[in-house]
Length: 387
Image: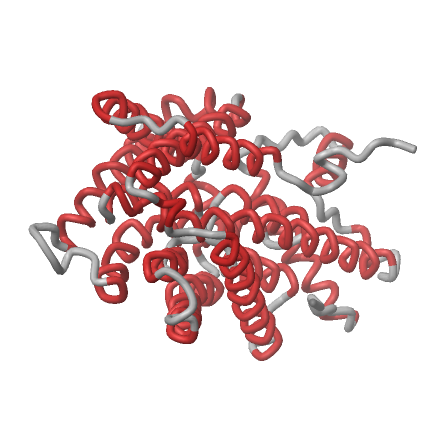
């Protein structure tokens, strides 16, 4: 019998690295001048991360997906309205059951933008509208740079004491995140080709930056006595709240797709982009918005929620893909001639001698999906995404 692996158990190795960073910071917290240098290193890593994200973002993909304004509006409403309302309700119900700072962390995660990489990856895995997912997830992150600190001011009262204001929080986040992102995107004509050939470069930079920030944040939290405030009951409660939050948001989004009769590919975009929260954006934003001693405690709910959403979305994306494959197999031969996946499109283009570059592929996939949807409509074969 083969031994189980991390992949077969669906355990992301990054989770183990996060646990390792938390454990390392708990045993060997960085203090004094070393902590200051670690903070600087973490800030530089985050700036590099957002620079690379900006350089990777294809303008063609944005233009291709930008026209689906109703879908993008639904994703934004889910991210910045549905999530905060659900978070406020949960925090109100659990007010007497756990540490107020942890509940603030739960509320904080509901104010964050959607993920980019994993939202797009899960949408593609499930057979959704990839071009629209790129646009929705990117728009969510750009809006969040301004909207998240404003919502934090209104809901968590960030910046209402001392000399820190909401405007200062927005300026701080814009300098740390938006400026490198914009610089990378503006330089894409010069470095975009090099970045596209090395897309795997983003993963170690992405995760390395998060691990540095987590180690720095938990070092400060350990110095402030985090483990005297958080016990096993709190961790189990955070896991339960994360699961409930995900269930509520996914359920409402699924109901919205049926009520509005969204096409299957767009329903998948809303389901994944509208139900995820970004660890990449959330950790550095927390460092800019909250006192250093509280950051570790505040991002703990986000770390738990992040891993739970990855587990659940991976399973659901695979299920949606099986549903789509089964529906495609049941179509008449005439309707199944339209290539849908990137692999099918690449084979079809190679057969006729028409190469398609990486930047154009999301648009081609979206156009093929549109043609296929029209064929389905004419033949009465439109299927729904089922939970």
